[in-house]
Length: 112
Length: 113
Image (tube, rainbow over the protein chains, first blue to last red):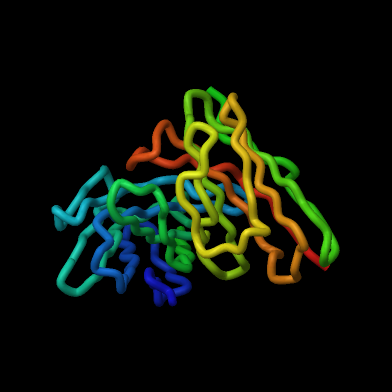
């Protein structure tokens, strides 16, 4: 049972435009959500997180939005840069427990 | 500051064999988690160690076992290898077992023939 779903395996965006990556989850007990970025031959790198008590968190060009009623979160990258080309994983956890449930990833390509 | 390192980078084994994968945590980190990432999938949590004790486990059979040493380095052992164990194995360390950021190593690619 896939509790965290990323339904778009890939996304292409022009440099300078906005990239929007989407994620849905089924377990309403999740209370902490994260986005990781992964380049080939490297491990995932933490990007940004959001607690379930918030609906938005911003860090520079990256903003994560959380819609608890829809069990949906999204990552916005503005403006997109070629160096953002990577696989992005949405992830979720519950309580203070560090077990993290990952989605299947979305491969983002930013075209110069 | 040295990041998380894993060895070996690649490994080929045959079905039924046993394998040991190693992970060196980032300096100052006392918590390590192991993940399995099958092709086309996201990482799946195997287990976590905190100060040498197992601190949680995902849906993996007992033939997946681990150790954490006093220097906080870690091993993942898999017995009786199956073809489906072919995957990228990632370890991640963090300075605590709460919501501190996990830092991932580059992984070990295991192929079981």
